Image (tube, rainbow, N blue to C red; front, side, top):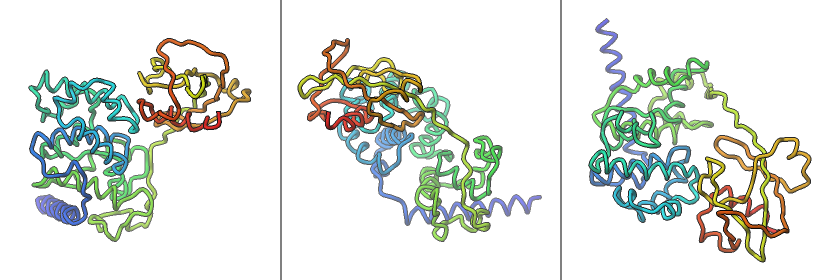
Length: 338
């Protein structure tokens, strides 16, 4: 029994060494990986991890740089007005993340004396921070022995252990399988190294197995079967009618207080309709894919002038002067000749 435990321990040590060696030679240069003070590292990690929720690294980098330039610390984040905050976030989408980030900053200053808590339960008590983000912060910002379970890490585990059934790919089972990675005396680097391998080597399609430091332990590699089993996720299809009011070269937008996914942002006046009404309409139609739904929108041109509360007339040429979600910008593009 002792010999089995010893062998398992030595194997984990070997895996840890291989992964860190690969990381030291191949890691990407990212703005939140700079040499920073402890305070900066905590803030940079918090901001980057919130931005990376549902958004890829290459997309986040320019937004992160701009955000840090304009809001360089937690105190400024807690005090910034909402309009300036949204302008800094504009284009990233999922605007509730920005609102939660500000709420988190205010709570940290009020409850934790301005210091990001290094306790997993306290981190989870902050707005917008769940299991993944809390473990990522603990590992990266505080150098604690945590391995965050993001999509990249899940993919490595599914291939290493050749996990195919719904039970095998459950979060509960994947969290157990993380013991495969063992522990490192460089927890911050190690957590980032594993995620980096998933992002750069163990890709969803065409994985670069010959460069992978865990290849010899990978059952999928031995079987030459790299298909990934994912939980079945189907986006809801919803139907909407958007009203386009035009006065000279300006378009009427309203401050949204109806749809939670675009709360307080400027949108065209719109309402949800049923499929039958959508199908029977002769209006121009556009499709917009959101993270949680597929939106099918009927564009309804209105000639009659109207007044709506919380409405604004926006010049199409100067949309960059306003905080507009990508959703609204896509509708603007669809009415280019209107």
